[in-house]
Length: 403
Length: 142
Image (cartoon, rainbow over all chains, first blue to last red; front, top):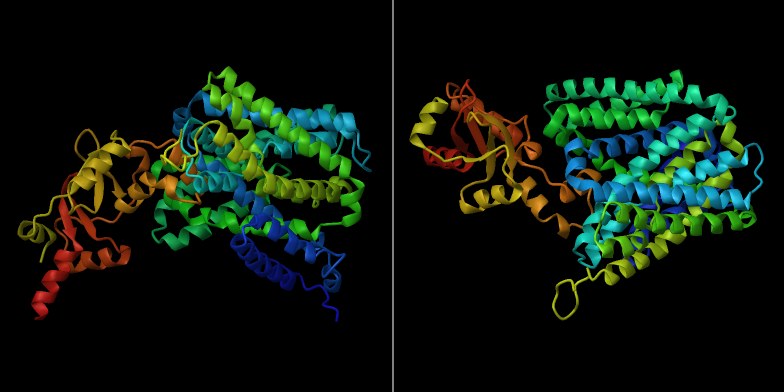
């Protein structure tokens, strides 16, 4: 039986099968992310996807772009200037250190490996991977801390760092894409700078209007169309005027929260809950891009990215912690708890498949990010537990309190 | 019946805090009086500038026991702010010259147990407790 061009049916099946496979995985103690990806893989062109006579690239662009803009908006709006001030220099320093450390290590690792990928210079591919490598998965980290009832300076710093580094990753990715799109980096520098500034200005102006309109919407349930509408307008304008939708959506979130002050809670409460659904969509969609041949052909790339990112996080977080005079246990062990990489990384990789100049290499990038995300999901909780144990922040069975 | 008349017959003390109060101070105030459901934030001129629900404060205090946080909740957990940063600035309220029937609709629409009564200057005059209203309604029916 052939189901021709049934994009909506495929999307529905992805969401439903992803949801239930994730629940099943949770019950048997497996990472939900692995179940999402596995489910998506079943719908790849090599398997069931063949019957749908369609490839995800044909139809997923508006969905992926909007979904990632929603995530960028949520990330931008989750941080306030006052909170940044209160978090202190340690958390900010470590977040910067581990993000840039991972980015540099992955960049250098790929330059040394020098993978040959058609249609894109080596420096560009190294920059893309390095930007994606900065992100960490907050959900996985919180789950580990909750599971072990961990408490202490390392746990607190870890929460602060994972809350910040996705924002840094999105900013870095947007800058990298603006720099390498459509020509050499030197040629693009001025254009990229212009695009970044325009993106921030558009997001800021839209954020101001969103904050001014929000108090007129009294029903909580009607705040969702207001926020979604604003994100779509900014995202759509970015497509027409060629600026970064990600930066713009992030600026929209940050500035609307800034202008709304404490009332921003209600506005973001209406959309925060979408994050899980968006990530489910990202993982299953990314799974549909699975190609065994590409996977096997680029095992070296997967290994280099995997180890370089961990090494960069370890060195970078230690360096950031030392520089900001964080406690010795934080300096020594925090990097081990920053291994998980999830939704934002996969979402960033997915957006590449919709840009003409990256179309050829996007399959390789998605497959590498997917493979490493899966491995990180399995080892992440173990390395985090190791770090928390070493820092004495997991309560002992006898006392019930951290050592 | 006017709201001001109701307040005279059913004086109920509102929980008030100041904008620079910490989470610990607010919890102490809230838990110190079993009848308090919510807190109202006053500025230095004793005018109401915001509202804090029991649910929101409880969630913040017990954040480490939650297995999942949204990104905002994550940042609130590690960088909790003062009352002014946590309060809701748009909330349901009543003025003293309104009819009780009118404001009951508002109370049910927003489903709040306590409705603050605020005069045009912004001063908090008291709260209308839904249980007190229900009690009166039930008595009148009987």
